[in-house]
Amino acid sequence: MHSLNRNWITEHHIDFEYKKYVLLAYLQHVSENFTENRLYPYLSDMVEHYRNLKVLQENKHQLYDSFPERLKGAAAEQFRLIYQKIVEDDSLMSEIESIVEFSIPQLEHQLREGKKIYDFIESHTHVFPVGLTPLHNEAGYLLLRNGDAPETVVFEYRVTFFEHPQERYRGVHLEYVTAYPNSLANTYESIKYDLLRFNRSLPNPAAYAIETEWSLPFQATFLPLAKRTIMKRISNAD
Image (tube, rainbow, N blue to C red; front, side):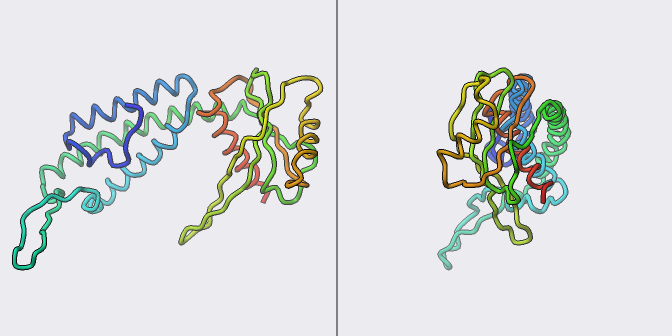
């Protein structure tokens, strides 16, 4: 079970033992990846599942809209179909509540384990500016050294904004640029200077080096960690 659909509780067979098997198989897969320090997308996915379960637990009436409809009958005189929500079945509601009550502590436990790993990795990750940091640092470069990997991987980053009815959110978009072999000549400062020479579209970019003390799965851990790290750095600078 590599992933868990957003509506995993209400799809297919709504049976406590079956859903228990589905959830535990998924969490076993997550645990195996955590053991290998592979945190994403599992950590963010579990946060979403946990929040959805809490919503169902605290607002049970919202279950009504999450169920598929089944055909009850037809009103010939009005030429329309009448649907009845499955959620009207009391025994089904009881089964759903049992699934939710079982699942929340299971996810809480695995989330705690993931956060412990994330916090430990973050405490052994170092970030610092390369050269002078401009006043506006919403665009620039990330110079990533992943443990004893033989190269420094460069990404261009840009802070993006998207609107919500109540709030304005920021995110970070990354685009791969190139990689430099680690050597005495390829210091962070020389890499930044080289990037400035070949990319005139960023005349005064910020540049941050992010290092880990040991090698991590790049796509599953180091890159998401780098995005969160630079977002935190930029937010704290505001």
